[in-house]
Image (cartoon, rainbow, N blue to C red; front, side, top):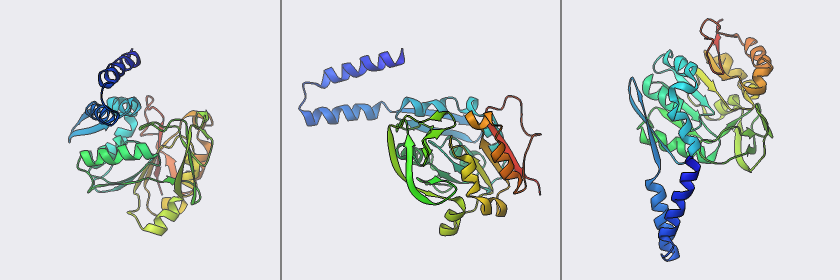
Length: 273
């Protein structure tokens, strides 16, 4: 229904502007598109979060903010103010903004998709959180290198991309575009640039979570106290064995007392020694 209505309305706009000179027609249609950009307001205990969305996909997460991943909200609600959170695979920033606004966390958000990163930056600006939330358009992996982000859809808010691979947790990617992206191991990134080291990591990239963690061995050992990892698709089918084994070797264990039966797909690991 929504797609049919959208096609009909776009035909009306195209027809109504067809008589204009080409340059004026393009400007008018662009202005109409700008005025139709959708904004979603999410009411929280600490005020309103605002998201401006240019695609139907980017509307999905803010519209279902408290439904998609209640365990992520629960985890963020328990983090101490002024701790440092790294949000890896931040998308348009729904959890990064929540963490900065609600908990007063210092947040570093990482998103390699160019269009989604642009939306992330815009949302940080709209919410006045630039003093607490830094954004970086880059990928993480086990080793640092230049490579490509393989994408089935380049639109703002889309997911299921893979850095340097051709498959995600849902299987092979039908690659529509390969975006050039700088990639780092987390340990190299910390060594090169001395960012605020993470006390907590939220990791959700739909493909190479285990490799990213392996590239963060020293950082995990030195500063991190908790890691929330999405374990989904083929990773869930395998029981997240590789992730659990690697983190266990660094003193992290799954916090089973924290978990609830209705948790969507994220697993919390804490350092217990």
